Amino acid sequence: MKGIYQTEFHFPNQTGFYRGKVRDVYYIADKYLLMLATDRLSAFDVVMPSPIPYKGQVLNEIAWYFLKKTEDLVPNWTLAMPDPNITLGISCRPLEVEMVVRGYLAGHAWRTYKAGTRILCGVPLPEGLKENDALPHPIITPSTKAKVGHDEDISREEILRRGIVTESQYAQMEAYAISLYKRGQNMARERGLILVDTKYEFGWHDGQVYLIDEIHTPDSSRYFYLDGYKERQAAGIKQKQLSKEFVREWLIENNFMGKEGQQIPAMSDDFIASISARYIALYEIITGQKFIPQNYEDASSRIAQHALKTIEKLP
Image (cartoon, rainbow, N blue to C red; front, side, top):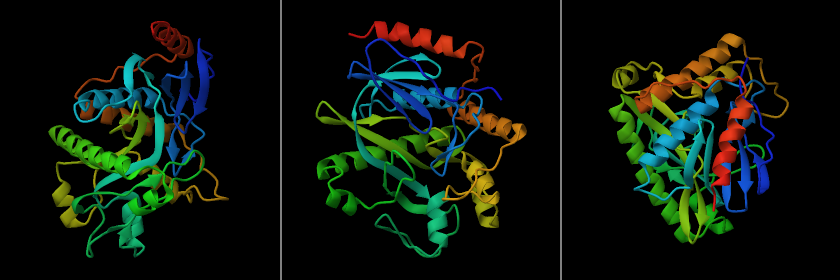
């Protein structure tokens, strides 16, 4: 199926390149970065072999939407969105911790809890919770940011013991993460959704903490539908959700969790189309805007042209 799986551009003043799980990142003049959202899909920290049509555009446009809506809370890295698949911004030094904020017991947290663990990343969890129950208050369960392989759960105490970030940096990241999550929850509720959990990444630039990467997208967040949440929870049935958790569940059913020796199951064209449709649905629900898909014909030329025009204007 059509899609942008990876790119190989060479821009003027390009000083570096990094291919992440989903994004291709071009460093310009050691000061800026051009982040290109591809249609790659990552699950269990493994990149799937098939692109998901329009996924990159959805991620880039949702991230831009929320980054603009939260600039009053925290400085962020963005400068321009010259193309639906591209964001240009300030190159920050990444702080190698993902701040995962959870308001509900879902996904990885539930799987850990179900296995009997009651302390997650140093945070105690109460007894008697069911899958997808609301937690007494939002909690932060950090993870290390792995360049290759799996991210790992880690406690605040261990982060500081290892010197991954300073205590003042962590305190600022923690405060920013909670305020961003609360803003995200309020915005989701206005659109009939629940922001269940999400992750934030931060960087260091000019002596302060900056919000980097994406926020509140279906790759970094889990959403439930607000309507009927309480009834489904009381009945003990699965929540209706908009996230890529259904992809993880499908992979688990097909005996894949990213562990050594496991083979990635083949995705049918129909299943790939259903993933694409879910990404587009989330875009339209969370932003209240109609999604306008870009034409994949000459996508590479379009992206290069838009990127070049923006790079030429940089000081």
